Image (cartoon, rainbow, N blue to C red; front, side, top):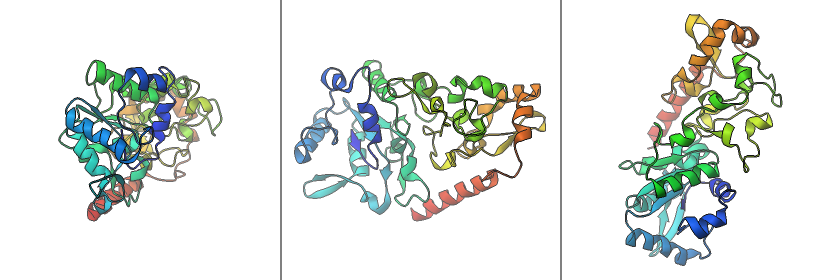
Length: 333
């Protein structure tokens, strides 16, 4: 594993895997060659193991990357090694090792899409791993942090069966194939138009900012900390941490999102991600919402209690902000 622009949160998450345990993984399942935060050796001795794997086992190893790719100052905001009297940047090492890897796996939203490190105004010009390896496929295991089962399940699938089926953002469908909303145990409340008015309540958290309708992950059935709990189980909304554009396009986390048109001229709120800012469409929620609207449940319980003009940001502002961000980053390049 190579760590670049990261908080090491995905390593900590992976270390908390329960079945199998992390010690089982290192001892009996995977030949874990290099990871600066877990190596017994340090410095040049540990780094040589990485170089030997690269040179002696081409197209036989899996490169795992944690953290965003930092491009500012030719990558010199992020030094990850020292070789022959020269500092090695994260983007140079990932590209070098990645080109000869059998598979490249980006774990965490920073490695997958840039994540919080790429948040506006993105002074480090951070991106996901795919940007530095455009000639090959990168398998993205997003999340802030990624769930340990998503990481381990992906690695085992690669080792035993090869590349898993991926969705359009390069994530394994077995973990990212459905929205959180589709599997949410509070979906009944949504369909009935029964919404919480504040965090901490047991009803559907959509009106207090939940991004479940546009977030793809299996958190409702997998949960966290050995399946003990998960955000909505703690009565807090999903913040969409697995999605491209997180956290900027999912913010503010606890504010009801802008409105979009539905069949019949009615409008219902959804997150800016579903409005096409990153190529999504509002189909993520329109299908099931339309039926409930026509039956009057959401119309009665949600729309009539939504005060027009009280949202803290509008669709126009979101689009303007996104365009400004793209143009500003392009100028820096």
